[in-house]
Image (cartoon, rainbow, N blue to C red):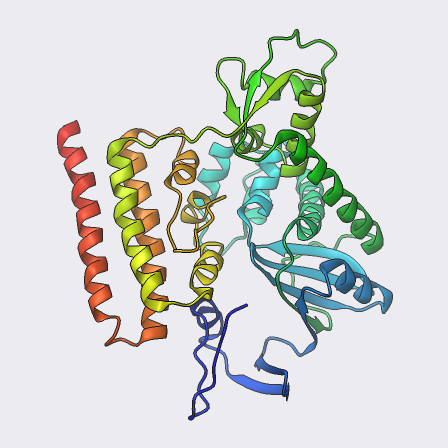
Length: 411
């Protein structure tokens, strides 16, 4: 949770991501006590329930809304991104998520109804006039029935993902029909989703105990791949030539995380793969220099602000970046000192040429630093953060010169 104080003038400094969402809204004090303060954005509905997740978990909140047959939207702000769960008379009918892995386009790719090159092309054509779903149907790239099936699968994935998260954060329920035309109203059983979600938590833990971690290395054992399902054979084919990490195989599988882990677990149980401890992938000298330039600044900003919530707030901000930056930070977890593991960023850039990798790496880290500077300026004030801002500009220029030098050498 983010620590706030009320100054003598009654002012409160809000986190940057909250400011970005509420900047144009008038706020109204709804309720308060010695232990809480609730502000409501005008025009955003009337919250009738707010919860700090911890003692009460996601399953408790979903069960409560189901039991009392509530209609409305549950807004969740979790450590790994925001979600919206839509209810009608206690049953879940739709869901939205900020997580890249739970995007509709990602779901269509996972279910084999769309290839990633086509998805990237369609995303580039989005202007706000059409949603992704509408544009896909308009271009006859996805049949309406396939889109409906993918949407149902997406909603299930979002709900199950709630149980896999650490459940740290807050929830707010706004009662009443959301009155939105851009949602598909599905018929789903809330209790069935809760039971399946809890079951998957236990199974996921079992899978990861066998596979050690997402950074563990899997290699082909050499056994003949007989009596394997087609999906198992396809996943195994990725490591015939060279080992790969569990995380890489989950991404390459094109499946939802839980389904990919289940298949990898089955391959390990059948002794088709050998599991070894994670082997850190070394960065090239020039990429390591680029990453260290930005990490130097991130550590400096974190130290200057000296607040525990600084990196947590930055981590949250990464979840709402526009594409493709959001995809570049997929799976990236900031260290307590604000620094970033460049190896995960480079894994997300796999497939691009070296120079293009560096350009996108600098773009991604520059955006991260920009977000960090915005936080520092808000917490320290413009005057106190002026020297840090100058340092930022110098480091970014140095990074750009490194990339420009690579371009000259390539010519």
